[in-house]
Length: 223
Image 1 (cartoon, rainbow, N blue to C red):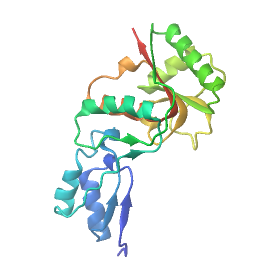
Image 2: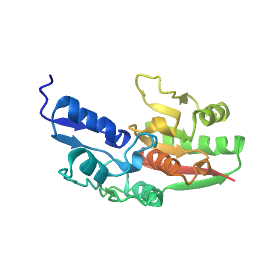
Image 3: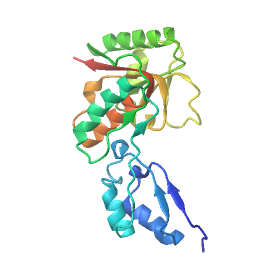
C-alpha cells in the first residue's frame, strides 16, 4: 500500500467530493491541505459548492477552514472591479483584499460588433504595448468567438491559444475564458463582455478572465 502521510490539493474547487473522499480512502490518510477559490470553480458539473461540504461530508467535521484573503496578482483597481462581479454569486467566501498596489482604472468600452469591436481591441493592445506591457491577452467566452475575432484583429503577432500548447511564451494571445485559468498577463481585454450571462458558470468565467490581469484591464461590450 501507499505510505503517504499528508496530501496537498491545489485548485480543489474543480474536484468533486467523491474524488477527495477516494484520495482519503486510497491513500489511507486524513491529513490534507486543500486549497482553492470557489469563485474560480468553472466546472459546475463536478466542482465543489462549499468548503463546509468537504469538512462535514469527507472529514466528519474535523476540517479547519482558514481564509486566505490577500490577492497578490492584481492591482487594487482590477481586484475591486472583479470583486463586484464575484459578489453576484452570493457565495459564502471571503472577498479578496489586494495588496496596496495601484494601477490604471479599469477601462470600459462600448462599440458595435464585428470590425468596430476588433478596431477597438487593436487600439487597446497598441496602448498596452506603448505602456511597456510585455504580455497581453484578449479573452472571449468561447473558442468559436476567438476564431471569429482573430480573423478581424490587425494587431501583429497575435496568437490563438487552443489548450494544446506546451507553454504560453509571452506576447499577445487570444483565448477562451476557460483556458485562461492559471495564467497571468500584464494587460487583459475582455471581448464582447455582454456575451457572459448571469448564470453561475458565466459569472465565474468572467471573474477568472478579469483576474488574469496584472496591471491593466479593459472590458469591451457590444451594443
